[in-house]
Length: 160
Image 1 (cartoon, one colour):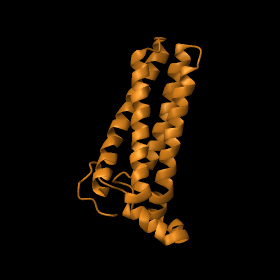
Image 2 (cartoon, rainbow, N blue to C red; image 1 turned 90 degrees about the vertical axis):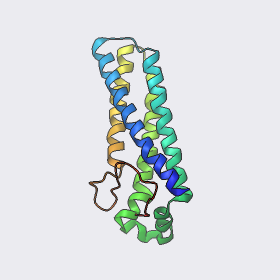
Image 3 (cartoon, helix red, strand yellow; image 1 turned 30 degrees about the horizontal axis):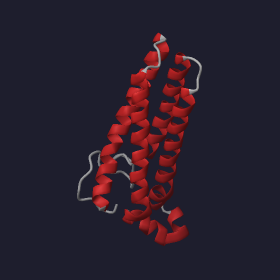
C-alpha cells in the first residue's frame, strides 16, 4: 500500500505544478489585459486548490502510517532532528506541504472578496507564485543530496 500511495503522491505532484503554472499565467494575463475574472479562472483555481488538498491528504496518509522513513524517524525520537534525511521527511516536507495548502486556501478565499478583477488576478498570481516557491523547495528533486527521488515514480520504491 505504501508504494501505491507514494506513486500517486509523486504523480499528482506534476498535476499540481502544471495547474500552478496555468493559474499564474492566467493571473498575469488577466492582470495585464484587465480581463474579467471569469468562470475559467474560478474553475482553474478550484482545480488547483483541490489538487493541492488531495496531495496533502495523500502525504498525510504516508506520513501518519505508511512511510517507513517517517516510522524510522519517529522511532529515533530526538535523534531524528540531527539526521538531515529523517528531519526532511518527518518535519520539513510535511510542514511545507501544510503551509502550501494553507497558502493556496487563503489566496482562493481572499481573492474572491477583492473588489476588482485586476486585483483578483494580481492576488491569485502573486499568491500562487509564493505557493510554487514553497512547493519547489519541498519537492525531493533528484539533484537534492540524500533526499532526492526520481522524477517519475516507480512502483517498487525503496525506503530511502
